[in-house]
Length: 144
Image (cartoon, rainbow, N blue to C red):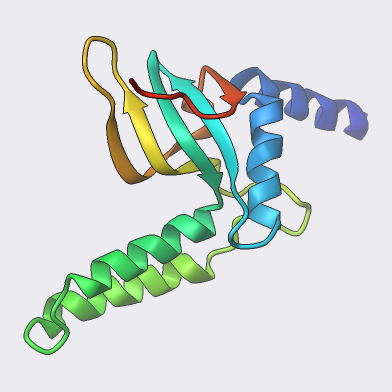
């Protein structure tokens, strides 16, 4: 009976999240911190193309970017809470002891975002929910 309930939970999960995509996210999350996989995803009609990276990679970049742009000496009341919040994010486990994701995020580095009717724009990082992805392919889109 317990096995049936576990199977039902797994099936319900994969009605919302693409198994192959989650597997790729697991590879970059549990591999070396600089692991990356070229990918293109479709999220509600918007194509996002770049390198799939771990959420740890994303958090490290966010911490570096935000703290470099804040003046610690002149604005400690702003700097310290942000630094502390980012430190907490670094210490949060992404995968639990049963090898299940706690946070279902997908992070794409050097992301080109293709919106119908306009030129693509590039951003250093893009983050979204795995559940919001409608499809994906391995490899990057090329902009003209």
